[in-house]
Image 1 (spheres, rainbow, N blue to C red):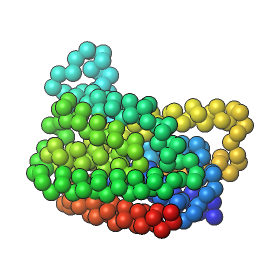
Image 2 (cartoon, one colour):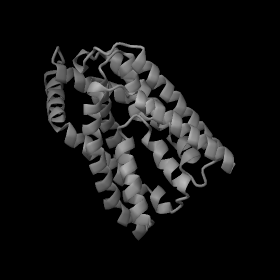
Image 3 (tube, rainbow, N blue to C red):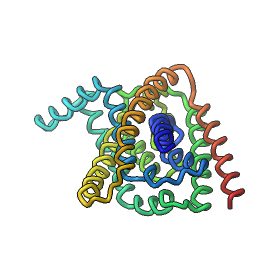
Image 4 (tube, rainbow, N blue to C red):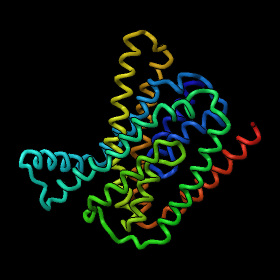
Length: 285
């Protein structure tokens, strides 16, 4: 059962990390709803595996973009010049947009960990998360419906990057969704749906890599102290592979979907799931 549960959560992570529906919320909701209480599923090892799997998915899908962006960034540093080169500008805008999320993680990570990741999860935490999911669904709907989406990623400016970065910082709270917040911000700024999603996905790589590196260092200390169980280590390759594969196909499908469809479907999904979580929390409470 533990292997099956880890496969399910790996699929959930790979899908929900990139769909605007909140992966952190789903990784809390699924075990909470079905009563999965094995500590290995909430372990640092499994968390690292899921992060690294989705990171590999982003790097694989956008490998050509990343090669171009990284090379452009090094050229800009070497020449001390950004100029009008779109790849150089994009590289620096990605770094700029990462700053708010880094500060949010530093300030609130421990509080969020205590409120949402330590079992048993309080009823009030689940209710707050449901409200956050519903509220972000409303913002996503409005951003999609009330603006014309004509701007491309080449039109991105420093102000746009900063706004999207602050939106990403809100995703420290489960239920908000990193991709949901950044795609919503991009749509509100008038970007095409697929371009808003592309910048969101590119922006997720440094954040996921940073979180993954931090977790790897913590994991190394745990392995050194002998506090990692064999069941936790066994879940690492499962979480890594399943999250990577599901994330890869999710990005591919979503990018094509957004070329001809709105994001309103995801708003409806968020409202429906929020209602289910809210009702379940009240009944169990």
